[in-house]
Image 1: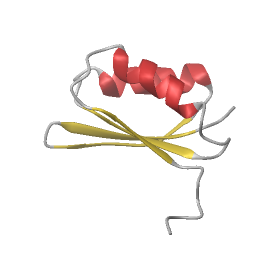
Image 2 (image 1 turned 90 degrees about the vertical axis):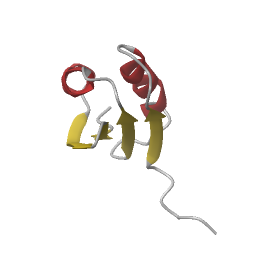
Image 3 (image 1 turned 135 degrees about the vertical axis):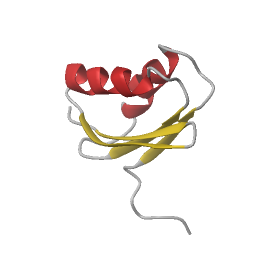
Length: 80
């Protein structure tokens, strides 16, 4: 049952305003193994800029950033 890959995680931050999506991601990524990925869904228009700055400042890699309708999807790879 389920996946053997336990290092990847998902965070739904839709409807939250800056800085909450990044703050929740900062907390959530701590439970991801180094090298694992956290996928974040957000609707805040400032989120692309915020997640770019967060990943650079925190030492994580912003693997991808996409927008579908009004929802941004970010994939962060934990660096440290």
